[in-house]
Image (tube, rainbow, N blue to C red; front, side, top):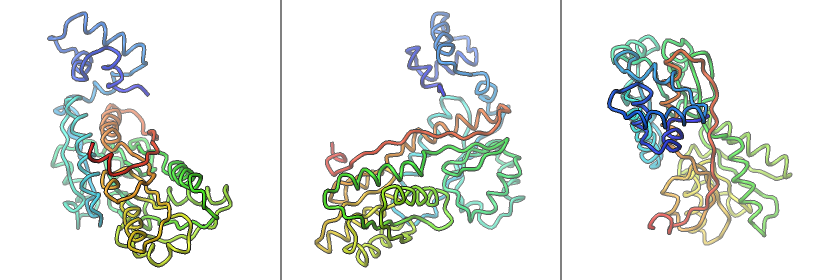
Length: 331
């Protein structure tokens, strides 16, 4: 699916210029407008839906609902990238966004949440980090009073889209890569999963179990709750009995690697997410790199599409396997 950035690149103009052409601003030259319109046609971009929702006065604001109640030092990095991507795209599209943390809605039922959002002139919401235990938000989404985009939560209805990497396939890819690179592998895998009742954790675990069946792996499963400390404890207890440690997050991979270093033994470890802290673990590790900035930017674009009365859909964005080391952080 072509984006406004693709149009800008092909036309050789800024994204803001594409937005001006779409909205028929008077201060754009005819030549520039022709280039942009030609690029729109060549790429099959459909600006009418986005354009119909660009005016915040007409369509309302988009709320960015962010879960910061996560016991990991990676939350700041991920949340800031989400915010930066959303704000950047909102500026390009000339719409208003307002960050709202889950803690600000604590104690409210679905009626209270809806009234709060409506008081902020919110018409669309992008939700980051919703789990299966967030019943109130789930009911808010199900009522469809707001156009919703869920990041990493596979729920779709007429007013709701979700956007994510293919969590299941990405987990299989990084685990398989790490296993195939290990010459001393004898089939014993320690898998440290994320949170119970988490959509992401469930998808990643299912990917690991599929790979175990395909490659006839002996996998020992333990829940690390996305905690560096818990992953460290699990590794100290079980790490020496396994050939490879697969972690469902980079923070847990860091905890596992530090435990192995303290135990003075080596086991290949891989993570998931591609956070910069991974480079400070002291060893090279494979991980799945997610572009949180771009995912969030596309979530805002998708929310404007829904606010233009389009139907909800599933959007899968690409993931990348990378090997992060300290030098990557200081270059």
